[in-house]
Structure formats: C-alpha cells, structure tokens
Length: 170
Image 1 (cartoon, rainbow, N blue to C red):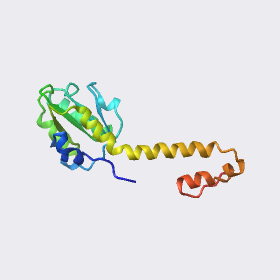
Image 2: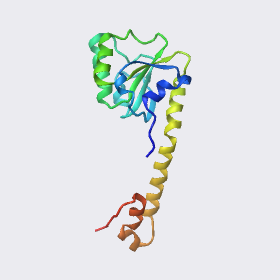
Image 3: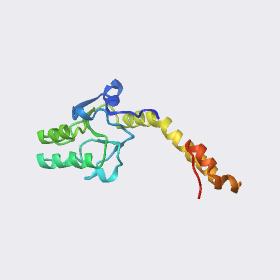
Image 4: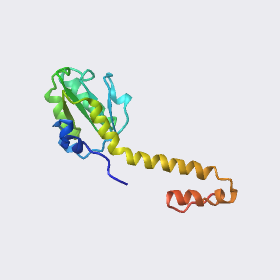
C-alpha cells in the first residue's frame, strides 16, 4: 500500500503556504481528506484522518474552551487543524498550544491568499490512486458475487483470488 499524504507533506509544500504552529509530534499523521467546517463541534461532522480547515469561526474563545476544543478534535481522530491566517479566528491561547503539544495534534496556519480548495485538491490528488484501487477492488468483489457459476462461488476461489488469500465457504 502506498503511503498517504502526511501533515509534514502539507507544511513542506511551498504552494500551500501553510506553517506549523504547534504539535510537531504529529507531523507524521496521515491525511485522508481535507474539509472546511465552521460548525461549533467539527469533530462531529468529520471522520478520522481528515484535516479540519477553518477561518476560525468554530474555534472557541478562552483558554479552557480552546484546550477542550483541541482535545475533542484529537479524540475524534482528526489529522490536524489548519486555521486561515486572515484575522477571523479568536486569539489562540497558550492552553491551546499546550494541549496540541501534549497530544501531538498539529495546529497549522494557512496564509490568507491560499484558498482552502488548494489544500483539498492536493490531498485529493495525493490519495486518488489509493481511492481508485479501492473502487476497482469493490467492483471486482461485485463481479465475483455476481458470477453465475455456483460451484465457483461455493469454492471461495474468486474471493480468494481477489484478496490474495485462501477462503473456504462452509
């Protein structure tokens, strides 16, 4: 399986003008998708491995609220957060950065002139080959299940070939 895009890959791409603010221990985190969300509980709307992109409307004010915000994103399994550097977000507190460092949860800042869609496209393109392989494997699974040869289906051979393992149907 090919490696997915990581937070470090995003930070190191000069075209994305995104820098690490805290959580360097999480630079290795894999990014499966990048999604913009301004809802008050973004972890509820996103899936593990996704990068939250926000102008900061979802970032609470106050030290304790920001600490809990980072904890909730990490517990939801998000890869990290990037905040648009366009002065909409509240002031980020020391508590937010401490929680980010403690959890190795990357907090990034993306320059004002970089549209979030540029980050999304990079993630999508980087993961496209893996997604395509998944769709092809699913198609082959449907083909194996739709075979008219009952003896082949009962033998498990088509599925065994698809998943490169021995399968017996009992």
